[in-house]
Length: 196
Image 1 (cartoon, rainbow, N blue to C red):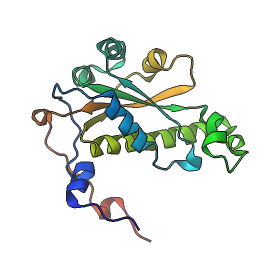
Image 2: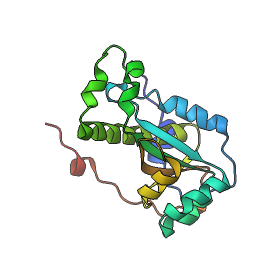
Image 3: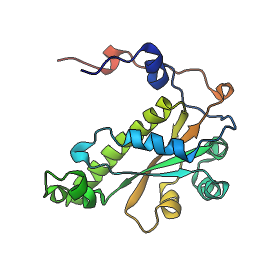
Image 4: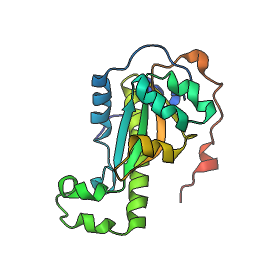
């Protein structure tokens, strides 16, 4: 059976994790991004469909392409982040199920309906985006997930010629605590959950 993580690990992943808006000027290596991806890809998705497609935006040139798609309030924190992960979902994910889910040779047929494919891609791609954030935190990075951008512009600049659609953005790097807002409240168990 899996062991229970100690409190410091739980703090790093959840309890002390914050949405960062300001960044230290420490770089994030390509090798670290590879380690983060190689960890997050192991977490489960339905039928192992793995629809997430991620563009790690690091260069100033690529950030300048992204900037016009950002709401004004998201521009400064995104342009100064060492990395911006564009988390997308591939509407053609079923094309890879012969490899990803080999024990069900007809699995691709389960997703021929466009609405079923969309729901599956969006749901599992979002789930993989959350795994990405947990993996990034596990490797010592801070995260700044956000909406507040023009999906069509992002898709045009970063996913042209594909069936990948952008879902959300997540700034990655080493956060500057001076840029944090006070922590907002969370719902208590009884406000959000029931046991029946």
